[in-house]
Length: 175
Image 1 (cartoon, rainbow, N blue to C red):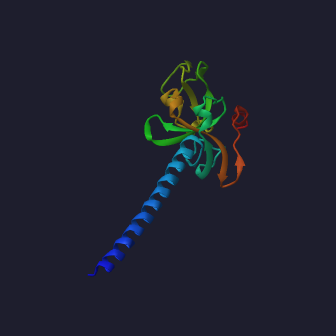
Image 2: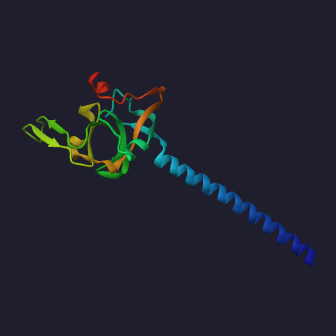
Image 3: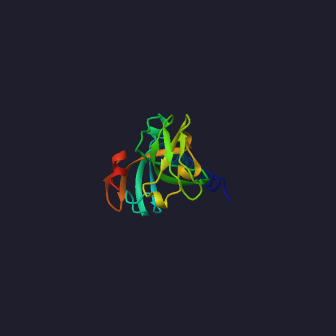
């Protein structure tokens, strides 16, 4: 192998390594931007299950949620939120905020409790419930949810129909 041939190979290797480093930097920059936007901006989420019917069909609806409102502590009663499931942190759930910290929730008798219960939502927590109460596992089972578990407030349903999500308690009263 001649010195000129080895020099050309070395230059091609350097050019390839430079291009690979440049592409890797662009990829990592894009990945980090995506993470920041999805964690602190807006993100897409899939809705499955009957707990939020009729607000969502529960058969693969897609929604867009924003993460700024929970971070800034601006959640309100009636907001539809996506949060980490308290009993399984690997899963996310979508529910409606029914009560904020300091508010009292009245729970009526059921199979497990034979008397009316009154629960005050502690500081730094919210009380969440599905719109379809008979098919929802929510704060009635696992209690108030820490605000740190709320990932975002749902703004828009994008599939199967494009529409704004009604983040008010009036939406629940329609059912």
